[in-house]
Length: 234
Image (cartoon, rainbow, N blue to C red; front, side, top):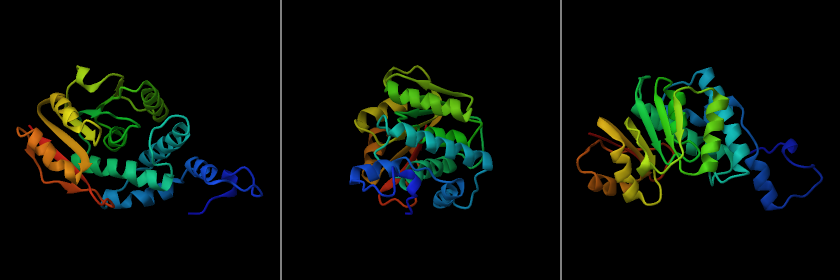
């Protein structure tokens, strides 16, 4: 990676490793580089200019806020784009080959993945982000406001207390996976789908915990050694 001197205090000042990491975390990426990093996850599909602009603005906000609150342990934008944006868009493509009006709940949304990239991909979706952390919820509202996304709501509560239901519920691997699985399942409408972005070792756990769902074969996430997309339908 090429580090521009403008990202550092002075070219004559020697930075310690911690300062270098902070400087890298504050770097942004041009839209063409973002598009290049996303190619493996789109499998021939192309993002519109408006979608790329939204992703670029989202990344900038994430880098800015991540220096204040812990939104993601991944700090380098060259890694953030494939790890978070790329994987989320891969999930979006699998779930929505074409835009369709569908209600979506993203459980434990954190920094907004996969929910917000999914909404950028499918602008016909009605999205609810459930995030119990007040600080992270404030960040999510700022992203939604900056990107001008409509039909997106943020529930600042624990998922098990949410009253909303949706045709699609998304969930990334989280702590207390067994418990949150049951909660996510309870948020499904009849004939709804549950989409899990999890490690391969968690596939059998999910299938055993929710035997009433019709599980598709797991789909490996591009550029990942063990992460997979698992979709179950009522």
